[in-house]
Length: 219
Image (cartoon, rainbow, N blue to C red; front, top):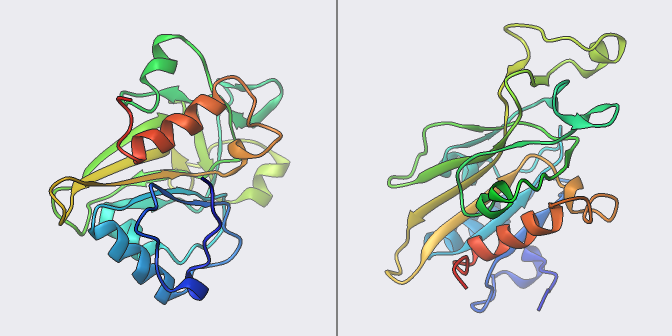
């Protein structure tokens, strides 16, 4: 069952929550909400976060714990994209259960209007980080979007150099020996909207993301 959860009202995350999803947040989470999410993850919780470019989430304490850094950029790939729009990315699959079947079947997905999801050193110990979507080496993350509207070109030392990571999966042991903490972060939420949900392998990417997060990837 899919349920909407308002942490400020409920003050807790239900014990039977298989996965908590944060898709397209429009404003930052409050510190009390972030604390609830951190406690949930410490006990083996599962969290999927999909954040559009230039949105402030307030989730930075969680991202730092797991070594995730959202870039302040808009990713383009002039080599591998949908038709004439270099912002509608067709990402390269890397090795991970979320995309392994799609990769083996040569079924692409579409990641429109993405920001980078970069790997950094986690605050917590025993965190496994896996980038599983990225651009080609010709892609980059635009930092000055206004300037890019005039001319689309890479600016060394300013823009995010390709290949640009677009999604990351993190895992670590929890205080419950039967549960692993799992966190998946995407640099866009648009791929889950009606406009893109049925595109190529997007539905499979979404389903695989939630099944992996819930530790049900082998079912």
